[in-house]
Structure formats: C-alpha cells, structure tokens
Amino acid sequence: MISVILKVLVAGAGFASATSWLYGGKTVSREQELNQRRRNAERSSEPFSLAGVNILDGDTSYDLIATLRHQSQWNRAGAILAAIAILIQTLDSLTAD
Image (cartoon, rainbow, N blue to C red; front, side):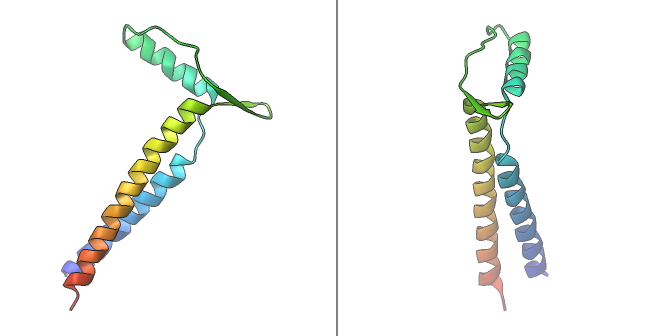
C-alpha cells in the first residue's frame, strides 16, 4: 500500500515538474511587462519605469529581463519538484519488498 502511495506521489511531482518547465519556456512580451509594472506602481509608492531590454522577433517585442526572471522562477520550481520526485522514487525503491 505504501508503494502505491509513493508511486502516485512520484507521478504527481513529476507531472508538476514537467508543467513548471514547460510554462517556464514562455516569453514575456514588452506590453505584459509594462502592464505589470504599471499595476505595481499603482499599488505601491514606487515610480513607474519604462526601463528594459527588448528583443525583437519580427513584429513581436519581448522584454529580456522579465523573460529571464519568469523562466528562472519556473525552472527553479521544476528542478525542485524533479528532485522531490527522485527522492520519493528512491524511498520507494528502498521500501520495495
């Protein structure tokens, strides 16, 4: 029974890890970043900033810093979840009959 629970936990952590890595591959457009900065400036006393580094891909403009921030946060989550899946899988192999 413990083995079945551990296998379900491994599958869940593995699925969550893969989902995090897939979502981490998303780019952040310049418009999305400016909208987020505008909302943050409205909620706090921080000034609204237009600073940024753009990457142009045809007609689309991506914000390099926002994209790197987004990707690093979700890649970190994916790596942690993958490590959890491996730890649970190791525990499962140690408890196997």
